[in-house]
Image (cartoon, rainbow, N blue to C red; front, side, top):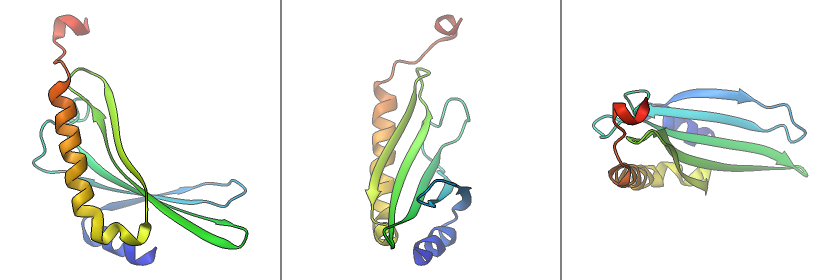
Length: 124
């Protein structure tokens, strides 16, 4: 998992570690990088991020790991979307991330294109 964490940091991702205290002693680290040049952006935040969450936990003496990659944001019609590829092998992230990123960006753009644009009259 360390190699993947180093890869994400080198790719400009910022790490945010969560401390879970459940019986599995899970480790969860969110890596986040702003997506530049992608339109439309999140309506609420005026930007869009690619998120990679790495999970690790011990069960019966064996460490299990997995990853999720997502884009989350408010779309033009005011609805929130979370587009996720999950159960990705942590070890595969360095080789697959560029492709996963492009797939999620295309899904985000397509979903936004299908969303009706909410006007101020509709909001009020």
